[in-house]
Length: 255
Image (tube, rainbow, N blue to C red; front, side, top):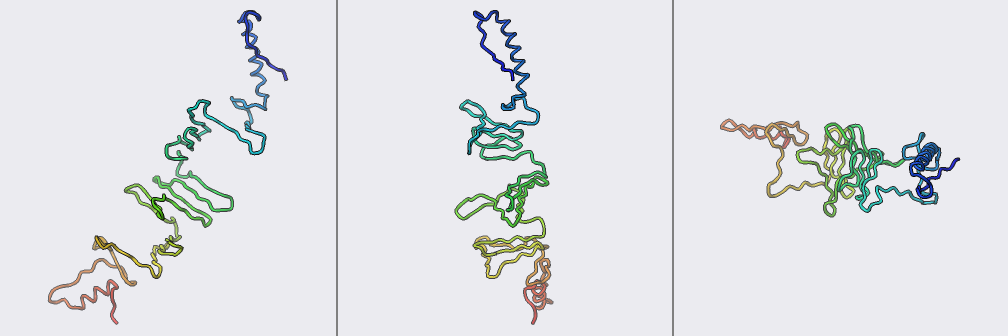
């Protein structure tokens, strides 16, 4: 392969500068003509078929890619992915943000993020209709969301005025467990089961309200839920009226 040598121009020893510039232009043209064949070097303008850049040949070697040689670092852009070298944070499909090590942006409702390991459980996080975020766990894995706010506590949070949905969007059940013991089971059919031996403790200042309107239906011990019953009063009322109300609610039955 021809070698191209570009030297500095010395007008005192090499003649007029214009002549030498023409010679150097010819040399640059020649270099541009042959550089596409130099497959051992990276071509900044791109190379047909793609290029592979390796940082080292030794075992455990590294490739260091920096935004700038200046002490104040900037960003390294790879397509739609941006790495902020100054903060060490990533932006996938969007710019990196403060306080977040990685930000994923520009996701459509069908797009998402998958954390996976071949043959093991994996977690998918993806957007849904109306801006809903879903976290799905597969292969008998478990999902833990929240932030430790004090020793032994984990918080699940959502914005004010919004609804937090905990549980699957199908017929499976939700089982709340503490100390490796099942405490509360909500089945896919809507049945809430308190396991045997559990106790409900209510506040002694304001107390607890069951039902907030007379039209809401309640039933006890298997009785069909009914609205708030009206007890007859007056001279014609008897104890049987009271018994009828209690029986309707399921609070008692005749022997």
